[in-house]
Image: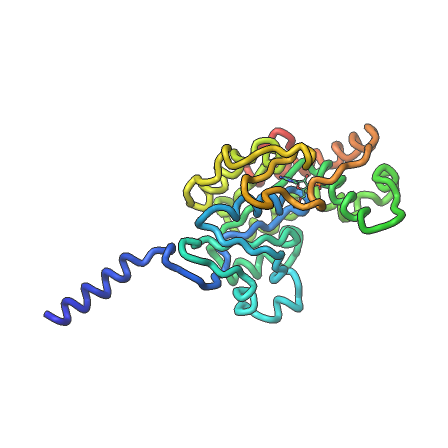
Length: 275
Ligand code: A3P
């Protein structure tokens, strides 16, 4: 009789254990925002971090793409994760450089074969300008964007190369099935963030808690959306003013990216309005 009671007790403990009971511990990520740099990765993570089921890492971890970190091993990686409190059963990190790093897909698939991947993208022409603005902010004197694009080897310039998303996605698909990658439209994240958040919450299998009423558009933030909570807007390094770009430069880039965009659409089986 006692034995039966003990077995019943053990079984009921196992059955009633749910992910929500993982408390105050550091977990490997269940989902990773793998990129793309300058497409709204910070905004997406910030918005997701208000969800009660999510524990989001505040820093970019750079484990899989940085040899000195990778050598420290998986325990080091887990120790970089935020402490997950009651109900936070989805730990998320974002490191946008993972998307373009050659080693990350294989290393990640080996350590976390079931992890869900989130990839946010925007029009590669705008992405390139945004990347340029960030680099320029660190230099006193810097050529204009138009000057860069008029150079002979401009296609080899990293801010331009990154926008050919198909090249990198192809590498990821060698290690992860398409169903495990969720694509976020970074242009729509600026216009109607709740729509993108609804899709992400569904992908992560968590309740649809982040909705339209959680957002407002801030004229002091150049009209970008913020989430209704203290410090709910992004900092001054996000949502910067973009410089004037000539029509010739825009047309040149649009033309350059048209093949990549077509390939990406086929690989990802998605169709964002700007693709
Ligand atoms: P800009 O600063 O060039 O406008 P990332 O976080 O991946 O570096 O992306 C930065 C870009 O996110 C910004 O580029 C901005 O356009 C975009 N973004 C999307 N949603 C935003 C928001 N709510 N607030 C500020 N920037 C946002």
